[in-house]
Image 1 (cartoon, one colour):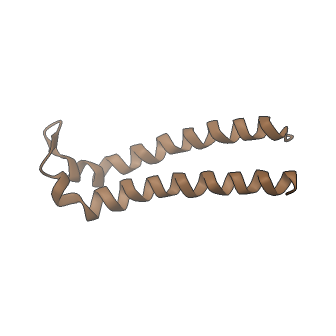
Image 2: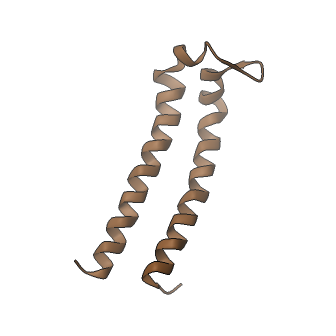
Image 3: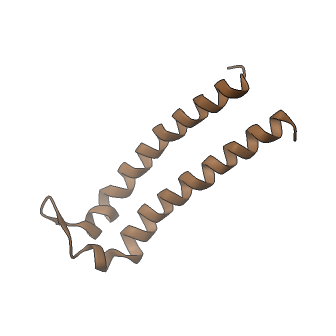
Length: 82
């Protein structure tokens, strides 16, 4: 496999994993599992409500920084030019 193909396959793998985590946090925790999560309170709010309103946004921002970190490592590994 070519060096460029390996780079992009790894990049796509990162994207699929990170977007799956975000989908689970936003759609799964905020919509599908909201009733089960509402049994747990966090800061006075039901956890399902918190995920629907703020949690998925926090998860998304954290995933942006994780993606930056992973891509910087990948760029260094394949020595891509900036």
